[in-house]
Every structure is written in structure tokens, then in C-alpha cells.
Image (tube, rainbow, N blue to C red; front, side):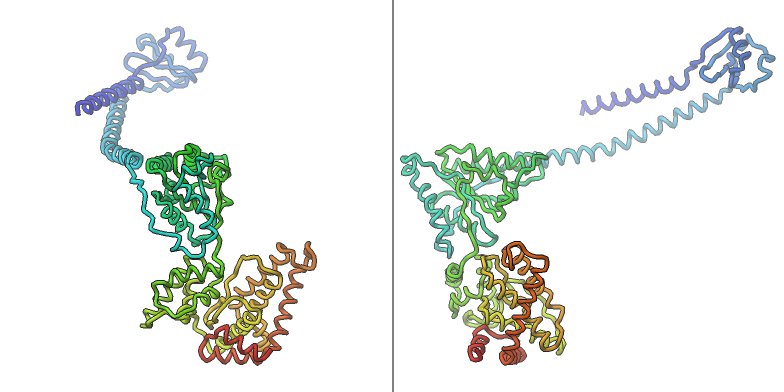
Length: 549
């Protein structure tokens, strides 16, 4: 309080001194005094611009200077050619009013600053306290006990064999050290979202019986500079204090992206700290870092070099056999009457998370329908909802419905004829089979393009026109043909000609037309079924095709 009062007095004194100096500068007489002879010389040269007479002096103002001469020395006839202004005391009044105005404005500004000062100090102190609380707060970085086992995860036999060595190392470190072998410092799990990378890391921790420290890469990206690096350091300290242990960093690409060398922001500081911590492992530290990403191409090269992430494990989408294994796990506690192999066949392109969602949605549908168990029909109804999301059903006029029936009938016939992966078609579905990036042979790609063109071909045969809803299938067909010619070298030559794509598309269109024209009886059968119940299975279409072919 005393210090505040002293500061206030000093402020007032400084303000008063400034005002005195300003007033002195304004009121002081800065004219040079001259003799009568000098005055006559200046007047004779006609260099005087104005003449001001006061009680004591006469002021002569030239272009550049201001002179004064004592009034008693001059005579009126000296200034016959000039208009003499009389300097009165009113100028003092003006100066006084100016001083009062100056003091008033100064007082108002001072009071405004006094009122705003607590708010400014409060905002500043709030920012300082926020940063201090973030930097000083002891975030509880604690390990979690993993209850996930490898038996809970289906279809990862290849991945499990890769990780068993690490598990054995953490259980029996002396065995490996006796051979001079060191434990890998980092394991990078690479794969698309939803394949179970986090569950795999938890299963490793459970099998090894060690503490498991989980962090997301995004949790290291902080607003304040230095906070992310501090968080990384605290994580590694906690893991070392509880060694042997496992650190799992999910979505490491959030903090480990390539450095461009043009900036040094918080993310790069955090990445540098992570690299430093991984380099600082001693062979006896007993800490392994497991990281997961689906974008290995964007990671900084320093993370990927030997000595940091020594081992990379690619976790791909499950195969048919692996999907069946995963589904068996999820169906263990669900009352059902389904063949997991049938569901596995209809879920090409599904990851582990999608399969879990599929089983859950089928169970919820069974509960809503008051059924005693989940059947294959429940899976048929919810599969597209899981794959493509729930869409509002379009309200079709009778004519539009006939176009849709013909369009979908042609697609399901071609998909069955070429044995594309699907189990059932619903009239309301725009998609029939999921796109896949798996290596495909030329005739497999052509079969898919024919299926995508089939609806337009059938409508052209029957109605000589098709609906705008064909856009999605047409776009996908064009994309596949473009890749076949440009990327896969499946044209007439490895270097495609200008109209190669047009030639291939016309060839596939004509072949699809010939196929559908030869299967008009099957088209009629499928259209009748779709008109009656708005769905048909692959088995029904195949049975009818077998009767005709």
C-alpha cells in the first residue's frame, strides 16, 4: 500500500513538472533585442512582415526572426508604412485558458487510466496465472491396467507372432541380454483406421504384465510454447519410474509430421523432445514405445530411422477368414442363429470396428423387433447403414419406381453373373458392393465396371433413357477405367493413346448390353421380385441364372 502511495505522488509531481515546462515554453519571450539603428536598417530593407507594439517593447517580425526594441526609442513616423498591432493582456488570458484545458484533459486521461488499470492488470495476471497453472500443474500421468488379451482380438495371428518376441523380452530380459541383444526402442503399428491398433498395444501390455501408458498424439499439441515438450518429458519420466513399461502414442502423426525447416513452432518443439527422449533410453530402461498411425508417409524421417522405431508392423484390413474370427468374438454373448462365414462373405472391406458396429446394430434391430435371436436378415438390413450411413429414403412416383426396379435388377444380375461380393440387394440402396483397393486382375475390374454400367444399359434397352441417380455408378466406372488405362497399363499398350479410355468404356458397355439382352427372362423375374418385396438375395438370382444358362 505504501509503495502504491509513493508511486502516485511521484506520478503527480512528474505531471506538474511537465505542465510547468510546457507553460514556460509557451509564455517565454524569445525575441532578440536590437538598437534603434538596427531597427531603422531592418525597416529600410523592407524585410519586416508585421509590427506588434506592447507597453514596453515594439516587436518586428521578419521572414525568419523576431526582434524587439524598447518603446521609448521609437517614434510613430517610423511605422507609417506598416499596420501596427497592439499587444494586449488578452493573450495572457488565452494562455491561461489553454493551460486550464490542458490540465483538464490530463486529469481526465489520468482518471481513465486509473479505472482501466485494475482491468488491465487483472487480464494480464489472469494470463500469467493460466500459463502458470498449466505449466506448474501436476498432470496425473498414470499407467492403466490393460484387460485386453490377444484372445479378445480375432484375426491378428500374423501381428501376434511379430509381437510375441517383444512380450518375451519384457518377461525375460536377462535371457536376451546374455546374448548381447537389446530390446527394440519403438514399434510402429501402421494401418487404416479401425483395424484394432490400440487394442493390439493393450494386448501386448496385458500379455507382458507391465504398466501401460496411453497418450494421444493430439494431447501433446498445446497452445503455450513448451507445454507439449514438458508433457512428453513427464510421460517418459513416469514410464521409466515404472519400468518395465509400455508407452502407447495413438495417432503419432499429429505431432510427428515432417519438419519443413521454415518454422519452429510448438509442434516441432514437441517432436524434438520426443526424439530426444527416445535417444535417451538406456539399454536397461525397460521402456518400449508403441505408436500407431494411418499416415506413415507424413512422418518425419528422424522418427523412422533405426534406433527409434526399430520395428514396423503393418495391420491391414481383415481377410475373409479373419473377419469370421472377429465376428465369432463379437457374437459370443449375442443370441444368434447365423453362420459367421456368410456374414464374413458379405462384409468385404469392413475393418474390426465396422464389424463390431455391424453386430451391435443387428442386435439392436432384433431387440426393436422383439425377436429372440439375431438372424441373417437382421445383418442384411443393417449392413448398408454401417457401410454408407443411414440415408433418407426417396419418395418415388410409380414411373420413377419402375426405372429404379429395372436399374437395380440389371445391377444385381451382373453382380451375380460375375460373382461379385454381395449377399442381398435392397431396392432403396444406391450401392451394391463396396469399392476395394485390393490388387485386382483386369477381368475383375472389367466385371465391376460392367456391373456399374448395367443399370444404365438396361434402362436404355427398355426405356431408351435413364435417371440422374446413375451419376454415382457412372463416376466410379469412369474412375476405374481411368486407372486401368493410366495407372495399371491395362490398355492396348503400356503407353495409352488419346482415346484409349473411350474405346475401353464403349467395349464394356456393348458387352454389358449383349449380356443383358440375352438374359431378358432373368430380368423379368428379378423385376417381379423387386416390385413385390423390394429386395432379392444373391442366392435367388444365382438359382434363376443357373436355370437359364
